[in-house]
Amino acid sequence: MPNVPNTPMLTSRGELNASGHVTLKGNVSVNSAYAASDHFALLLNGSVMNSNRTKKDFRHNLIETGAGYFTTFGPDKNRILEIYAGLGKGNSERVYKDKTSTGLITEDRQEVNFNKTFFQVNYSSKRQQDFKLFGARFPLNYGTALRVSHVKMSEFFRNDVEQAKEDNIFLEPVFFTRMAISNAVQIQYTSGSNFGLKNRKFLTAGNSVFSLGLVIGVGGRNLDSTP
Image (cartoon, rainbow, N blue to C red):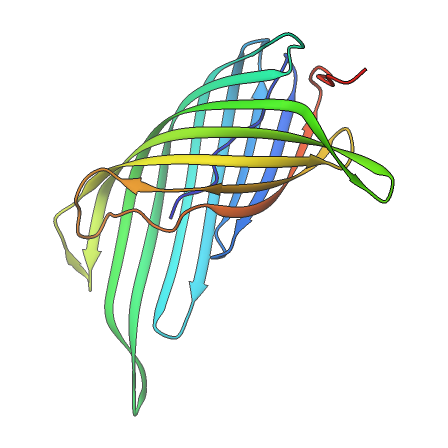
């Protein structure tokens, strides 16, 4: 179950960006980024989900950290390129249930601890269009991220019996749109896909990313391209 990639759209030293996102499946992602210099940034991300349904329960926890490079370019310096890499660690539990005359019974329980490495490239553009509503103008920002993640099980138990561990490489193209409601606060819609590049029985690609989030940014240059 992929978390929402961190796309902070940093522009200058001292800028701080924090965001929270929730998917249709209830997967919550919290991302943060800090520009330690005019081109170097630090990332800290987390994700949590706890879904209880009639036939299947699913929960997972993930924390990851990373660092990378960012720069602005273009005639108005309102285009942003970001390149990040990082490490993560998490766990998940999947429980399949069956309804019987005596109630629900557990048919299969899968418990996994895993490690993650990722590399991603973000490209975004600030204030290319405005959305007009009731006479007010709301700047729109657009962007895309391509993340490659390697996830490897460190432990895998099925019904309390240790299993052979698996790994997989996931390709995750993501697109996002932000609407600024103030200088510091934006609403973000994210959509994307998730592809597993290895044929695995258990460690396979989960649901695609479709999320709605809130982004808060402090500092940075004003990249308004309008006069």
